Image 1 (tube, rainbow, N blue to C red):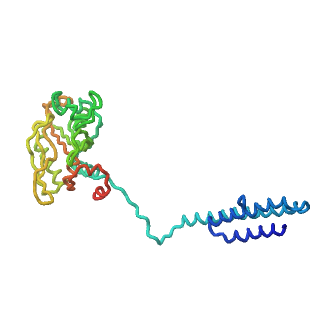
Image 2 (cartoon, rainbow, N blue to C red):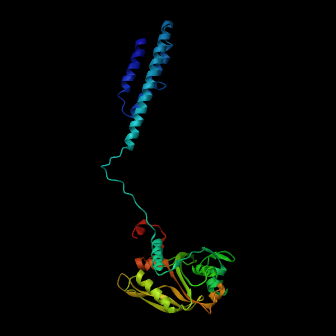
Image 3 (cartoon, helix red, strand yellow):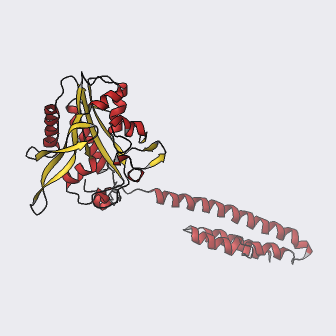
Length: 329
């Protein structure tokens, strides 16, 4: 019986050397060191030995258990370290993992291009809050209380006198309140109107407005600036026109149309935005002498500019975050 104790210990140590992975090592542990394993069975056998052999049997059983347990832990540590090295092994001859680098959204690309164009013309950039009061959004822009543009159904009101701005003209008012002429700025930003969503309308979109105020400013200056912008942004051969219109904050006022062709080659006039000479009432509201200074302003929809330039037929694609669409730009 005592010889069997020694044999089982030696057998376990020899078998442990043949274990090559953690799964086989777990099978070994169950076979020898588990609760019903061979090594643990030796300890229960000690109680069946004759009295004079029990001390020797207990010594041999504990020795086998300790030696096998120590060898098991050492083997386990070696196999775990080897597995870790295998996971971390990098074969430099294999093709590398492609890294997908993101880029700016087509609307942000368009804004950057617009700011670059007007920056080269000498325009600064101004920003303002998207949550506005009625003074900046309507009153200072010569829009009276009875004007349909102030209807609650056509605006996102937060409180009685507070709303999400419906135009970036609010930034023009804020600039004129704090800055004396000469003024030459563009104002990009998001605006909000509860329009019915379709291929050309969205309840949130972006505008770029420009404002020039100085002595002797005329409509000729505005027309020249718009023409230079159109020919840089859309190409030197792009045809455009002024169409008489009305806005409360400019007088005279005009719409800017481009002559664009569809994929079938059919040409049609497409509205890009509005413009005009700043109404004297607007100057009076912000404390600028309307007898001394004149100015002009325009506002273009940035989504509309991007859609016409890149032949995007549905404004909803710009907000759906479909990578198949966005990767094209």
